[in-house]
Length: 253
Ligand SMILES: O=C[C@H](O)COP(=O)(O)O
Image (cartoon, rainbow, N blue to C red; front, top):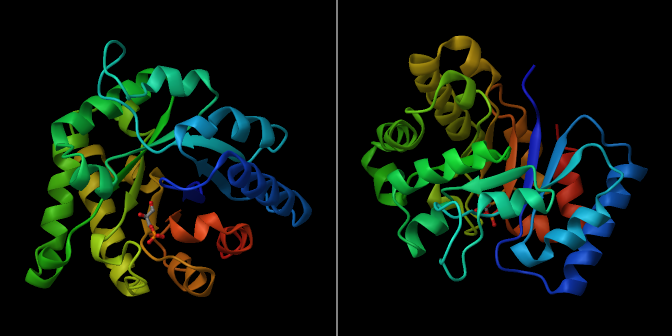
């Protein structure tokens, strides 16, 4: 059985007070509504890490994650946060290769490999993002595009390391646009990703890899998307900032 995961990516949102309120509300709803069969990951901006970690303290299925980590282990890299620092604050997951990082911070597939390695060395589970822009989807080459992203960043990993990875498929044209991929489009891509992983690491590892969907996932479409056999959860942006919406998405399995 693959892990069902719903990860909230707050992106660059939330004051200290707002982050605490959001976390407390999510924690209380998850406890009160007995949501225990889904792994929930909260990925706030780094400075929220301690507060969030404290607030999720007693809940077994809620984890702290980072939105990014450096491709360097430590040193004079002003403004960066390393995987080891993140781990020392109690994080268990880290998002790597989000399309916004690739686009606005020019992160290359090679740099992402370094980030994945450092995350794994520090005991963090990478949530590795892939996904195509609109022009690639329109040209019909989206499967090749996404497979190349995975091959270039991940296929140097050992089987043991790869088996720890979570993949998130996020079509860029669906992020924050209100335009969701249809559940069939998501399923087709997730199945293609799984087949690609199997071609390198074998069917057993591919079958054990959780593949999350991201892109305008909301309470009213999550159930349909999560019902697809190769969709194992979601990476949620906008809707993760509203506790009721986020928990309703978690409950959509
Ligand atoms: O990391 C989350 C994704 O970029 C999705 O964002 P969104 O749910 O606001 O479309």
